[in-house]
Image (cartoon, rainbow, N blue to C red; front, side, top):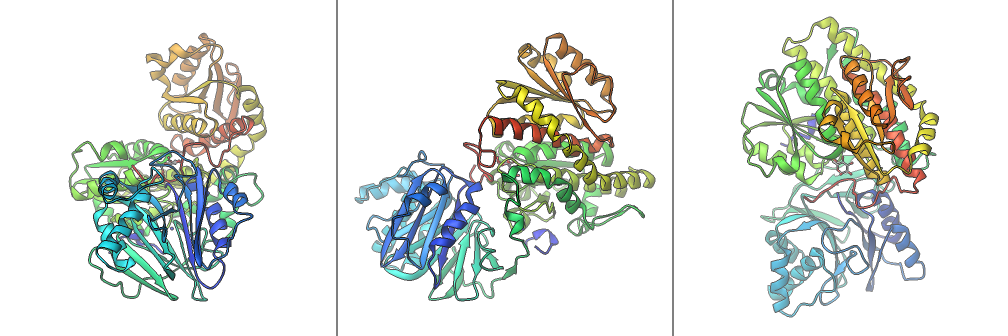
Length: 625
Ligand code: G6P
């Protein structure tokens, strides 16, 4: 039984589908808007209404909506797709859905078919012609070819084709010749089936498009195919065709407000401001400061593993990797366990030395990042215990790991991760402190002090958010800079990396994060009067050292923006701008210092006219390698 984190409840392209008694279009178009965070370079829909109508357009879902305004959008069976290009440039031609050679089948696909080129070649010799550069079009032609040559039903042709393809997919297929049929399947890419109470079925890449219509959902497992025909759903295994008896229907308790903007201009700002709440939610019910106790259901069964662990290896990508770096400092500092932090994409391909005494912690907001999933598989095959830290309930990581903990930050829609990061760091802090206690490395009174301090973090984050007006001024001043440097030491080094990443992601300004002292070995050559340097210079063990680093920057006329502890006077006298954050323990500074950096990149990006929720070329969840 997969762990699912012993818990109750939750890229690339986004896919939706509907089959039922009503017009599919409203669900499809609204669903695509909800899933647009997964990819947004083109969008398309296919509807069955005696004929198979396919409409697709490069650009945003809103452009598709305009495009179909004067078209026939009726039909009670339909599929829709919002794309993040893997094969073929983003244009109308490469947008999904794709259709078969005979025009009777339409497919949408999230994922990547790695052996598409050889299949395509074989199909071309059989006379198939292709109108796009995508792997997806090859897949639907392949299915058609099997259907026609093996003379099997469509469902069987889909299954046989999927047994041949290498790669990852979540697909949905409809057929002009089967007006009451929708077939969906997954391997590696997520897919949820919503069970309506009027005989209708919904499919989507995640549950957000579905919850307005039904709260009953089934998360398809890898290598499962769902066949929905004549108001009935049958789930089978793709390999052996075995029918799944009584698939588990989960009741979602996600609120609609939690996936809407709630008065904010965009999701990113909403999510930044949600942090006092999301950090609190990530520790809710887990610590009791009075008696210094801690509970995390997912951890209990594996505590002995942590107590005896020779080493912890953390695998993650992007912002989650930065949370992993904070965790390295935490686990070594408190629990005294050696830690290595690995980019999942490197780890999976470099024949790493991993064994049964190792614990691998996989960190991921989405729980679907392809490289992180592959790193988990690899570590598992070498006998390591895998612990997941994940935000999206029901995603792949909770299913693949031995145990884990949800971050409970709520749905994160903005592509640049904000509240998921601080929730990850909070959960990792809790775990590191707890393991330190189990290993006898921390005194009870210190543990209580740290737990007590953690409980004050949500209100301190609220205070940190009050710097917003000052940050707007700073953003105005520096919005046209071509480069930024971010410096930090100790616990603040990962914060520097995260600050730089946020700026790059949403404002397209080149930024580098560096360990403050390491600056001397390279980046210092870049510093002149045009270079803004953001220094995280809070009180604590490294304070004086960072002050020296600031002097080094100043000596080269660099422009200092410093994040300091409340009441700091020394750095105030040296920096062009200072942003104060409340006092806290050194190890908790990342939870506070990250906040102004998120706001700084947010405001700079907005002033530069960038789309902060959907930055160019990025996807919320990278489900291909
Ligand atoms: C993408 C997102 C980032 C995220 C990274 C890892 O690059 O744009 O915001 O940090 O993937 O995603 P994960 O869901 O595994 O945390």
